[in-house]
Image (cartoon, rainbow, N blue to C red):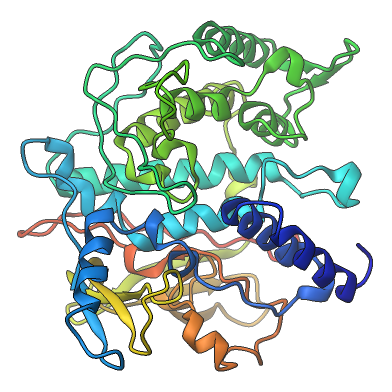
Length: 459
């Protein structure tokens, strides 16, 4: 709709005809992409749908506790665990079930929705396929670092579609229909669905690998497009995800998306028990499941297979003329050592449920965090006429352009806080800052830190 007033009117009309999940998704995507909504901050999804982030038994305990306190008194409930050490993967539950990381994944897919249609919206999402590869590759790499911190092996890609799946239970329930996100027993296998068979995944995989080896893809009319080093990764990302930007959906299919759906429906593939799908079906919950990372390691391996076909970088590609980095250090309480810890935090669930009270109802939980630190670079430019120019550059970790340090709560937004932010500087998106650094272990875990300087005008 062309005007903001018409947009609001349409929102009011749609609210009465669609469920709250679809409504929140559609309105969120629209707000993030309308020019007349720049500067409008979305409320945290974890406060709108806490049932996607907090175990159902915790929410039930919260409801019971409200009956034992005065209506104007705040109620605080500790979040309950979803497993135990009988499952080795539970050692990483603190990471996979982190509220911030799952909210990030939900928000990323609002900014880059698979349902984006350039011919309808009138705008092209620049490098959308490439960013799909990049973001999920970074998530897999970060997860492997966390596994190493817990003395666990790196992920094994899920590339054999006949292999039994590991089990997982999220202990989440959907407020939309009242049913739980279904659990998956160990040994469950993928099964055909009405709209997609396991053989379809295998066929799409082989066609994608064949195109990678040939160095080109074909559209429905038989026209060939090269997978070159300029546009190849973007073309491939759109095909693998896939989105409406895919060059040939009938031929290459939708490998990534249908993989999620088949895994989410493996417990009830023909729908005979009318159960909800598992967490792999929802971008706000899928990161909780260990199979998410194995699936995306397989997806990433396809991209890595493509990257092997490209020529290696040379010195001219990676160099920056006369500019060199002489030293790189980390300023923290102890130089070059970042201390991690678990921090207590609270999630307000009062806005999502009617408790019939004026006091807040909050869930208390812990998340991984780290001490503040600063990157310190010594950069030398030997291209000046008189002498070598040296610069000391310092940058706080919290100032990263790809992380989100603190999102405004719904209560703060209702008070008008954050309304003075410039719309082109803030999108409420980013990797949670508290998960920027892996946990490490008791004796310390060594990592390599490297920096890249690039030419702003060429970028």
